[in-house]
Image 1 (spheres, rainbow over the protein chains, first blue to last red):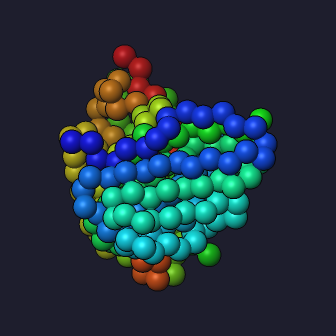
Image 2 (image 1 turned 60 degrees about the vertical axis):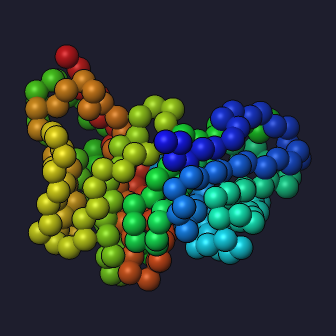
Length: 112
Length: 111
């Protein structure tokens, strides 16, 4: 029972490079979310999706883009990475907007 | 603006020493309050959802309660395996799907 799977688990980038983080869920959930977690700040919502083909901005969307072409996948892109984007990124999914969110184990991203 | 504040930031307990964690919140209207547990290097794991003042939920040594301004997570006779960071999050009635998280309380239980 995989749940929410994030790829890759670790990555080191240089400033200005681009990359895509992949999130896949096998629970047939409608809602998917991308968060970042920084020390002392708690989880902050970057972007979310309420269904296939939809995306919306969260609390800290600048510098990130997302796509939800398939219901089970939610991609987070960094077009031009900056050191301020060094963080742990978590993907989550939920069946509806009021059901508990289920999280992956994160991607640890360092930008030099 | 919705705000969630958790206290204390860190808590060190002896095995068997019961204690409580606090989550105070400011939200225009509460749809639900969620408690999660997070182990090092892992994603948050869902524990409870509370919807209205006076509601209580229990799971093993954990009990969550809710008032109109705060929630408590009581840990009764903790064991070392209860060591984790406990996160609180609120969902406002006008924030469909979106959660506002607190910074968490790191709990260490020593034998």
